[in-house]
Length: 88
Image (cartoon, rainbow, N blue to C red; front, top):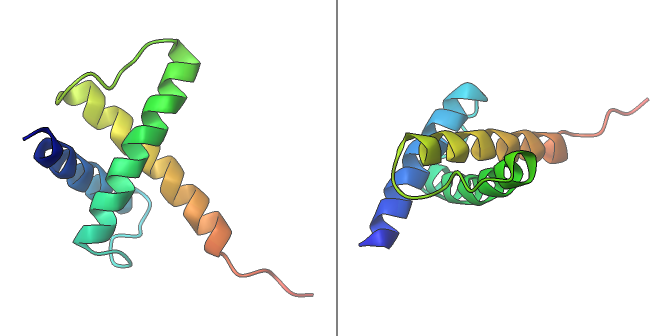
């Protein structure tokens, strides 16, 4: 049952992050889920480094917010990597 909660949280966090980063049209539901779950892991790591606390402690608002922040960071990294090189 816990894996279903992670998928739902990941989908929701990935969807919100894709709206924030204006990439919603580029990725589908599966992309949102993957970005959201990986973003939750990244966001949990970043928040634990910055605050020293574990903010991802279940299915609550703090975990959702952490996952959204991580997904936004992940989408930003992906956009920077995918950006074509400017030729002179």
